Length: 167
Image: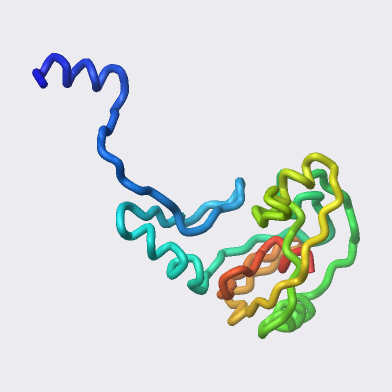
């Protein structure tokens, strides 16, 4: 092709005539920031290897409030005005370390009869999610200034931080 057609293609937007598989290893919540692994070509076959890896999260939670979605997007309600001290916060967080059953949040990408749970929940339909076995390896770097708690959490694949925060 001539240079003029190349510049025309650039003006119209980049196009690739090749067929390359592209995929990703996991999802991020709409308000989350972090790493999303993008796989290209033959590496797409290794998707499960990446998805099953342990993960580390930097978490911020606000005590006393609840949200219909488990994050800042949902409708908030005030649940409590209890102001625990640092010792109570640390011991409560420590109680989650280890293996446990966790109920995923209703607003998650889990499929129920071929539909994403969050789509069903947004449509007002009743969603029942089964508890899943997860492992919290550690909760460290706890910083507390009521009502905000920040910490670092290392967890197994499949752990929902929104569920941990709610619990």
